[in-house]
Image (cartoon, rainbow, N blue to C red; front, side, top):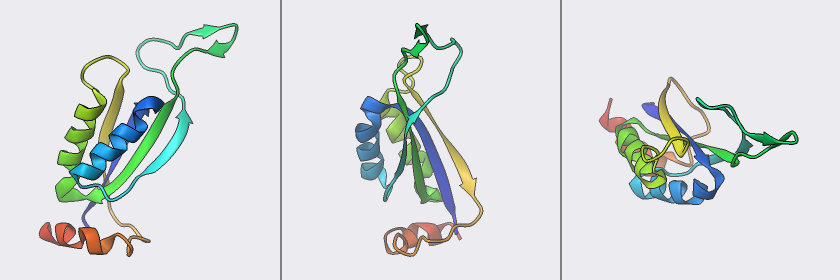
Length: 116
């Protein structure tokens, strides 16, 4: 099984736009983890102990390896990740094995087998 996991950390107002862009680029689905918190180069701002930062979502896309780079570039462009600090990041992780993918295999089976 030749799969990759794309993880994207995006402002919550960009979530649907990034998911739609990933689907158009070949992702067959996604998992969304809402209201994640993190800190970049600059510490988070607070007011009376309340966090003033925008909520972030973690988007997970398990994709066929041959499509991973195209999907990654598409979501980075749609989310404006390289346009401004803090707009979002995305990265790809290799997957050694996976189960529970039988419902996705008819869609991506050919792409996975191309790499074998």
